[in-house]
Structure formats: C-alpha cells, structure tokens
Length: 303
Image (cartoon, rainbow, N blue to C red; front, side):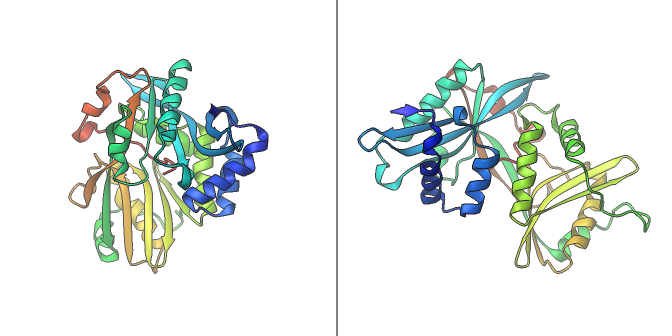
C-alpha cells in the first residue's frame, strides 16, 4: 500500500536510501533534517512485514510560463529496494505522485533521470524530454584564453560573499523571463548552497559596479566541476578569472551550463538532462517545443 510516512518510519527510509543510492550517512541525515517533509513523501509499504520498500520525495517549486509562475513539484530520490524491483511498485508511486500533484493544483512534475536509460522509463508515464544542459570540458590553458577579455578590476576588489537573498534575487532576475525556468524558493536554494558546501564545494561570487556573477564549484583531484554558472556574457571572463584564481592548481574544468549559453556556444555538447509531465496527463507539454535560445533551464536540482 502507498502511504505518507509516519515518524516511526524515518530510520527505515534512511536505510532504504543508503541501500539504493549508497550515499554517506552524513548526507542522508542532512537531507532528512533539512529537506524531508512527510506529507511530501510517498512510501510503498509491504503489508506482510509492515516496512517501507520504496519511496519518492516531492519538492515544491514553480515554473515560469507565459509571464506567470506555475506551482509545480520536483520528483526526487525515487527508489525501490533491490529485492522488490520489477513488480510495478515504482509505477504505482509515480502515478500516485501525479494524482497528488493534480489534487494540490500543481500543474507539472519535473524530474532528473539518474542515468540516460531512465529517460525512456519515465516516458512510459507521460514524461517528455524538456531540459538540456551544455557540458563543457576545458583544460586550464583554454580557460585562461577565455578569461583574457575580463574587466580589469582594481587591486582592492576581491571575491565578494553574496548573501543568500542577493543570490536568490540575482538568479531570479537573470532567468525568470525564460519560459520553463524552474524557480526554487529561498529555503530550497539555502539547502542547495548548504549541501554544496557540506560536500566541500565553494560558491564563487563577484560583483563590480553593478555587475554580478556566481559559480557553484567543487574540486576533485585536479578537476574543478562548475555545476551552475550564472553571469551576463560580458562579465563572464571576469568570473572565469576569479575561478582560476580560486583554484590555482586545477588543470581541468567541467562546466554544466544552460543549453542556450552563448559565451560557451562553440564548446562542449548539449545533452538531455530532465523530463516534465502535466499532472492532468495532457500532451504535449508546450514547454518541450521550445529550443535554441528559448530552451528552458533547470539548475540547482538535486540530481
């Protein structure tokens, strides 16, 4: 049977997460202490043992469309215990999530398939490919070249620490006019920031004479991954220079960018990233017809 979890189930849900995803106890605890809401979690319970064997979480969000904000939900951490798979349990959970979203007047459900083969899996339940990313791999010398046209900052200008409210405002102002943009509230962005820093990441923020930019960066060995890079094109080289300064020994950089990014348009490849469905089952989702410079953007997702 499918239920909202009771308080007594939390340890079972944490164990289920650990078995299915292999994340550290520290990360799992961080999610359940900061983002878990029982009424936004669906659990499949094996009645014969009275234990949860599958779950998914529904995180609140909004999607910009036709000049308005559309209340929607983000499907996250969907998993089934290995010995219960291939029994249609996840299908029941997904269909229940869609019905729940409809009853709550949430127009869309969005999710990021954990691996490429799962795109077809979600398509069975009315999801359509919508969101793409440009993935760019660069050596340090390439990034130095791209940073050549940076704004010459005075010596006393350093990396600034953008407040959470400023980051939320800047991100929204840069992207809210774009149809399909997935808008996270301040609590969700606070969690994304905390989760990123919790894993040793560094958020580089820079402002100078009214120009702003930020980059979510994390380093593993000599490679720096930039999972979100939001800046106006003409200020991009300056933010790139700041990234180079912040990681002086890094030799390789991987950027995950909006598909429509023009600064990096000659680099990398555009790949499918996330899917969307209407909770009322109507198709096609018009947002999926947008392409080129109008391609929708989903960033800071918990994928």
